[in-house]
Amino acid sequence: MRIDKWLWAARFFKTRSLAQQAVEGGKIKLNGERVKPAKDVRTGDTLDMLIATQDWTITVRALSDKRGPAPVAQTLYEETPQSIARRAEQSALRKLATEPAQDRHGRPTKRERRHLDHWRDLQKYQ
Image (cartoon, one colour):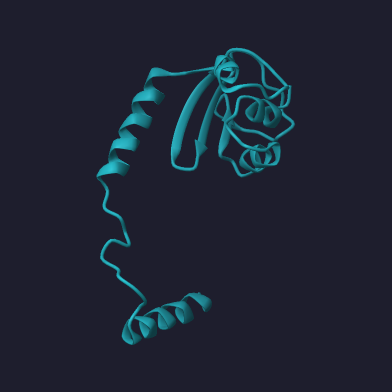
């Protein structure tokens, strides 16, 4: 079964095309190797995935080419204990981090806008 189709059926991605883009972009690794979306996945394979800011390591337990309800989709894989701990730690760090726009109120001042324009001009020529 195709890896992009399995990821969609296991509800890691909302659409199959998003799953395909993630595989093509190198966000999904099958048994530690970068693969193409048409690569076959089998039971017992290990997937390393970076979805948004979540870092997953799972083992494929069953195959399905149909997208079913979430409880059924969760039976298709098993997450490793290290992955569960890592995701919990990442979640805790995100909760403790300050919001970048917390100090900003309203529109930028004229001086800030000039700095932004200058920075954008520098970025164009690099």
